[in-house]
Image (cartoon, rainbow, N blue to C red; front, side):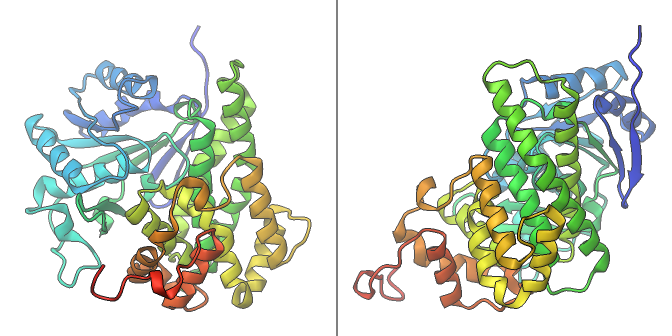
Length: 412
C-alpha cells in the first residue's frame, strides 16, 4: 500500500518544496529541469549516511547518472571548491544537487561559478577592490539542507575561506540562487543535539540581526520576526528530540519531532531571506572567531549574541522589545529579550562564554582586528569602533591583556 503524503510548494523567489519525505520528488524534478548527469555535492561525514544514499537512489531510479563529490569538511575553503570543479568536469556533469549543511551548500554554489568562470574562487570576492565579474552561465543547482542554520539553500552568496590565511571571501550573484529547494525534515532527524542547537542559534541570529540592521526593507523585517518566532518555539523541541534519540528513544518518525525539524528548516530559510537586508556586529565577531579560532559559525553566533545585543540595546530598545513580544518573553523589553536569549541558550545546552570553547585571551587583539575589517557591522544599529569590538569580546568572556603584554604594532 502506497503511503499518501502532502507537500507544500511556494516561491520566494526560489521554488521550494516542503514536507517529510519530499526528497522522493527530487529525481522527477531534476529530470523535468533537463538534468541528466548531476554532481551531488556533500560533506565527508554525510556521504555514507542515509540522507545522501537515499538521494543517490532517488536519482538513479529516475534514470539520472549522478556522481558524488564529498570532499567538503569544516569551514569551507577554496581548495575544496577547486577540487569540486574538477570533479564536475571529470563527470561531464550538467548540473549540481547539493545536500548537507551550510558548508556543503556554499561549496556547491561556488563550484557552479568555476564551471564556466576562469581563475580561483577567491578572485570573485565581492568585497575585493576589483572582483572578477560573475557574468557567465552557472549550471542549474538544486539544494537539500540537512541542518537548519545558515539558510544557504535560498542564498545568492557563498562564504569561502582562503586555505592558509582563513580569511573569509564572499561571492555573490543572483545566478547562485537554486532553481529548486527541498526542505525535508526527515533529512535532519539524525542531527546530534549540539549541532541542532548551534545551527538553530545561527538561524535565530540571522533573524535578530537582520531585524536590527539599519537598512530599509520592511518585507525582510516581517520575515525576520516570523523566523524568530519559529526558532523560539521549535528549537528547544528539536534539541529535546535529538537528546532523546541519543539516549535510545525511538522518536525519529514522531510527528512532533518532524514538525519541529521542519519548522526550523523554514526558520533557517527565512533568516537567510531576511538578511539580504543585512546583518551586524554579532556576525562580524562570529566571522572573526571562525577565522582566528576556527570556531563553528553557529556556535560563534550563539556565544556572541547576548554581548552584541547588550551593545546595541541603547539604540535599538524598541525593536528588541518587539522581539521580546514575538517570542513571548516574560518581560517585553530589551533587557527581557536578552534574558530570554540567555535562558534559551541554557535550555538547549550551549556554552555561555568564549573561554568555555577554548578561545584564549591572547587571541583578543587579532579577533578585534579581523572583526573590524568585516563588512557585516556596517549596518549595525550602533556604530562599532575598535574599542567597542574589544569590549564586546571581553563581555563574551575574554580578558584584556595589560598594555605591557600587548604586541607592539608592526611586530605581530
